[in-house]
Image (cartoon, rainbow over all chains, first blue to last red; front, side, top):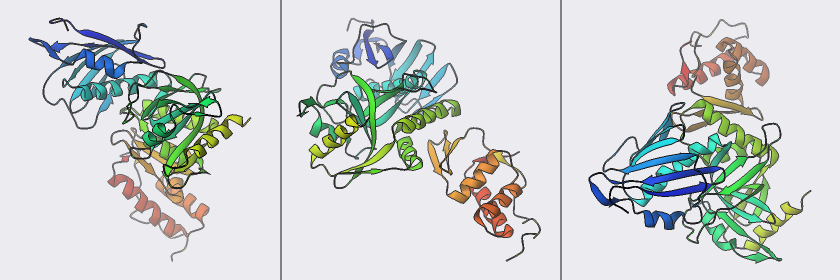
Length: 285
Length: 99
């Protein structure tokens, strides 16, 4: 890092592109977020494309706000959390954060989640496996088995078809169609969980939506009301605006209307059975 | 049990409307209420969903109680009591604001 000058990295996921300018600690050139480490963390999601938002990020020590992140305003927007904050006015963002990689990741998650709504999308706590040209969602809170499933199946080939992991933790789901004629697509994000394989930026049309449960491998249908309640719990949303929340909610309901959800029980064994379930979806007209 | 023509239960609130900040949807007859300030999803049972839907359409608590009585085949007095209890619960959780 050159003294006093920010280091820049442009990170992308689906239609979202953010340039993060990592500034050194004021009056302490050379101190601050480690750009080399940030590059390693987000490799595979770096781009030279034009960013939609440029975020000037300045480190500081201390606490900025409440424990839980919350995005307020109706443009400009502001996000305040315990160890970071940002303000977004059009394409310009100014952020402050504690100078460590975890806080940079948290800040970027809130910013990407906010921009997802503007891009007709939402970010979900879900693993996604791409198989046979479709991205299947495996939705669940922490501990539901997303990482185990990704680790078990990701990169393996079944019947000549490779299973690719789009994410083991957070995915971006967008509607590339219209409200009347939606077309949903799943994008990988640079935010992963325990899965340490190098993540890559990829996407595929949405296949099936599975809500994860513990138990012997089986699939059970879910009523729409139950499915949306469980899906909502896995929505990554920091917004305090009823309008924004409602649009995210409606996007999920539209996705469920086109791709009815099922409960997938899995005990970590018989991974081939999960592949068979995905294969069945692929052959369904 | 009192008859359906019993006088209005004095505990039945006369006013109050759903807080503007709330987002809500009714799916398969079940109401879901999202409170953005608490990131809280409230999932209502069928009778509470019916009262909620009535209130969200601007109906008075008494009208909600009548609907409840008709839909669930309970006496009018019992329906008023249930409506009053539910409204008190909403008020307790800050989901209602003054009309």
